[in-house]
Length: 186
Ligand SMILES: Nc1ncnc2c1ncn2[C@@H]1O[C@H](COP(=O)(O)OP(=O)(O)OP(=O)(O)O)[C@@H](O)[C@H]1O
Ligand SMILES: [Mg+2]
Image 1 (cartoon, rainbow, N blue to C red):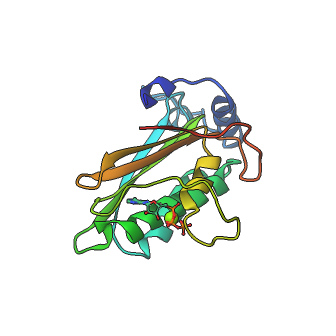
Image 2 (tube, helix red, strand yellow; image 1 turned 90 degrees about the vertical axis):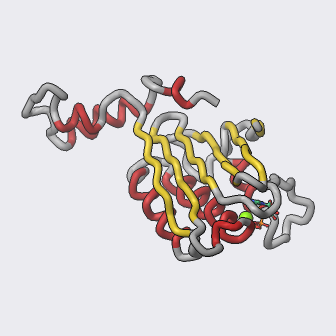
Image 3 (cartoon, rainbow, N blue to C red; image 1 turned 45 degrees about the vertical axis):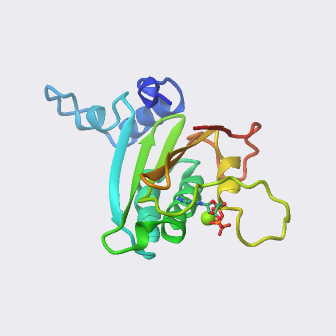
């Protein structure tokens, strides 16, 4: 997928950025980069990458980090849920939790928004399992994630590690019917 093609995407983000600029009175002191508000809420996508140690407690740190970056958006609960599920999978199903292991989190604040989690491999293959038993208490994480996504992808291998990513609507709350299922792209 080409995240680069999202640069300059028109839509709610620009509206939100304009609102924030106005509310925070940013725009007074001009520099060659523009005002603080123009720089902070500029038209380009905002992207973050961060690594975390492969410890179970780091999934909550990753969730809180992502939630802080998407604070104030309608999709913040989607972000929390997806980051929790994908990072928990790296701890549970891969070498990430072994000595020196780590997972990586990548976030793009744009519309559509984007989350990717990378792991150290060594386990099986991330597999979206459509629910057979609605009462099942495990084996549903990736399926639920897929239901929140415009698009979802699983890349990599057990040897090299996997990246699981999704694109989703910046303005879609978690209880919104999204209208179309994710199409898996490998
Ligand atoms: N990062 C990963 N690397 C390797 N295998 C994975 C990874 N993530 C998931 N899997 C595999 O895909 C299956 C489905 O994952 P899913 O998250 O849907 O269920 P689960 O983790 O088993 O249970 P839960 O409902 O608690 O999330 C897992 O059982 C596991 O075999
Ligand atoms: Mg899981």
